Image (cartoon, rainbow, N blue to C red; front, side, top):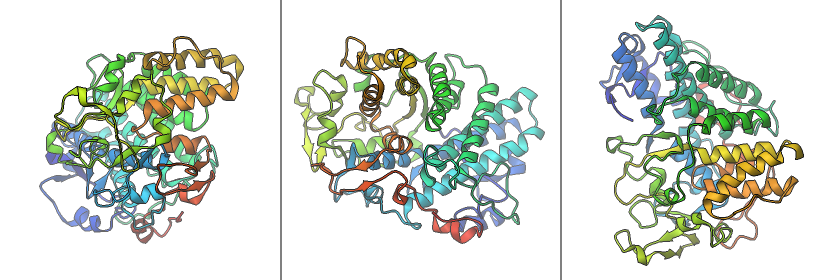
Length: 486
C-alpha cells in the first residue's frame, strides 16, 4: 500500500534501541530527506496524518534487501516448519538457507532485519500514540487512529516475541523483548527485555483497545487495513498461543462471523485476489518494487520467480486423492502451457507447488488471515478443552474437511486422536502461509526431520532448544547495554 510514498516513514526523535540499526541514528537526528518528515510536521494536518498512517502500512509490505517484514517471516517460518523446504543450492543468493538449517547468528540477515523493521513499525506507531491526542482531528478520529496504530503495534510485537523468545506455553517468565509504549528521546536509556508474559499481556491490551475503538466493520471496509475481524483474528491467534482455549475459540468465531468460507475452487486460483474468506491481507502494488522477494515468488514452480520452495515427499503423500488441495501441486509443463499438461512434478528434493500464482505480475497481494484458519483455531481450542467440547470441535473441523472434499460425515475421533486430526488438517490447509513452525513451538512439539527422504539437512530439536529462538542482533547488543543476548 503506497498511496502517499513521501510519508513512507515517520522521522521519529529516536528509533528504538539507538534505532536498532546504528547507521540510522545520524539520519534521524541530522537529515531531512524528501521521503521522510519529522513528527511535528507529520501530525500537523489531517492529510499528513492520513499519509503517515499509510506509511506504516507501507513498511509492513516491505520485502527488500534492506528490510524484511511479513513476506520474509512467512517464508522463514515455512522452511523451519518441515513440510516445506528450500532446495539445496537454490539460485536466490542464499535466502532462507540459514533458517532452514537453524544456523542464524547475531549478524545474520533475518534476525537483524526482523528486529529492525518490527521496531521501526513500533517506533512509528508510538508516535501516533504520543501525538494523536493533540492533533487537529475530531475526538472520534483520534480514537480510531489510536486504535489502528495500537493494532499494528500489537502485530509487530507478536512477530517479535515468537521469533526472539521461548514459547509462552513453555515458559511465560522467560525473557521476552523490550516493551516500548512511547517514543524514546535521543538521550533516553533503551529498555531491557520484559518477560514473555508481559509482552503477551501488552499485545492483548493493544488488541482489545483496537477491537473496542476501530470503526464498525462493514462490507466495504478494506481488508488491507486493520479492521475489527482482523483484530479478532489476531486475538484468536494470541490466545491460542497462550493456551487460553476459551478465548481463542470465542475470538475465532467472531473473526469469521462476516467472512464465510469461499468455494473450493478458490483454493486453486493462486491466492492473489481476495475472496469471501480473506480477513486481513497486505496490499502489494507494482510500485512497491518487491521484485522477486514476495511469498509467491519463492513458491512459483515455473522459474518466473525464485522458484526455490518445495514440499517434502512425506507432506505431499499426506494428501488424499480426493483432497482438492492436492491440486495445489499440479504444475503445467510451463507457465504458458495448456492446462492439460498439468501433473504432479518432483524437482530437486521435493514436489513443485502451485498454490501461489506468480506468472502475471510481481505485485501479489498476500493474505495474512483467512476464515479457514479461524475454523481450525476454533476446532483445536474446543478439542483441547476436553470431551464436553468435542462436538463443537468436530463441527468446526468438518467445515474445512467438507470444503476440501475429504469428508462427508463428522469425524469419529476423540481425545488426542481428534487433536492430531485437527493439527494435520491445519498443516494441509495453511501450508505456505507462515504457521507451521510457530505451531510446533506453541504445542511444544519435537522438530524432527529424521527419516525424511526429501530434507537435505536433517535436524532434531526438542522443545526449548536454543536453536529454536533467533539470536538478538549484534547491532542491538552493540547499541543497548541493557539488552541480554539469547
